[in-house]
Image 1 (cartoon, rainbow, N blue to C red):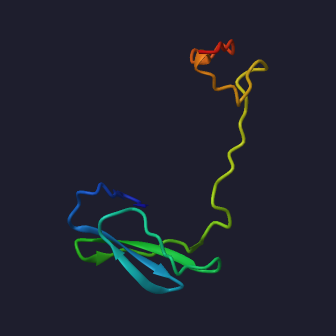
Image 2: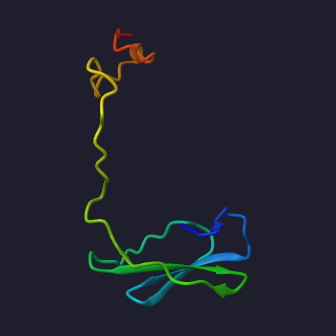
Length: 101
């Protein structure tokens, strides 16, 4: 998580983040930029705010959880000779001429 003007480095002892679920403080996170809410549902809404030297900043816009467990990123081949599933070790130079090892 990052806040405009301040990036969490993991070494900032005076920086933490308040995580809210459905408007209620869920956790003050001091040691990570991730948090797993095992009790969260697909309709839970989350906001976050930075706490810098004890002063809490504004809450972020609310977000919901992803409905998928993964993100789909379409591939655009770099050329007509490229096959995205051709990951043979012999093709590490990217010339699409793979050989078996």
